[in-house]
Each structure stands twice: as structure tokens, then as C-alpha cells.
Length: 114
Image (cartoon, rainbow, N blue to C red; front, top):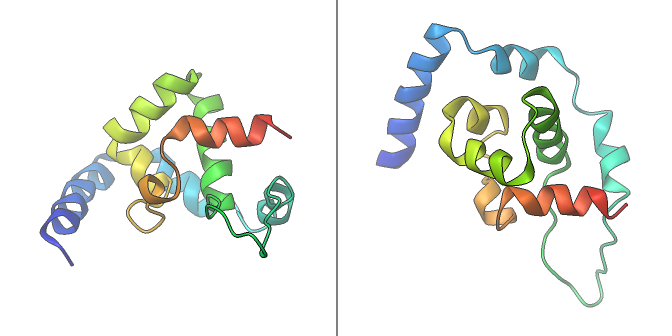
């Protein structure tokens, strides 16, 4: 575990102690049924390759955050990077949204295409 990961975990312990409603939602919702629905928006071409797509559960959770908090695309991106509870809800650092997607708006753009 890196020092940065340790600090994030310690900070999140404090957030959890104060009552993280998003953590409750993360546990209460069965996310697996969303995977095949969201997976249909990706047209992977194994012959030519391409950029790996964003995890389907991260996409669903991102869209839910946007709807629940009434956020515009730029504000959603800002809040994901600013709020520890949002990052935890999305599975950061395990999902590593920053490596799979250049920004949160890419997630919204991908879903609007279909």
C-alpha cells in the first residue's frame, strides 16, 4: 500500500464515522444486473484494439451521482475529484477512474451516444 492510499483510507475512516450515505447505497444495490445493460454501449473491436472502456458499474454509479445531486457534467467531474465520499462510491482507487477515463465527462458522453 502506498502512502497516498494509506492517507485516503485514513481520511475515509473519518467520513464513514460521520455517516456516509453513499456507502449504504453502494451496499444496498445489487449492481450486477446493470453490467449487461451498460455493456451494450461498447463496441469493442478485438482485431484493431483500442482504448479499454470504463467499468460498467462505474458508469452506472456516476450517472446516479449526477441524478441524485443534480450535477452538470463539469460539476460532476469536479465533485468526483473533490469529494472523498464520491470517490469511494465509485470504487476509487480500485476502479482507478483516472486511468480508464480522462475525465468524468467522458462517461456521460459515452452513455449519451447510445
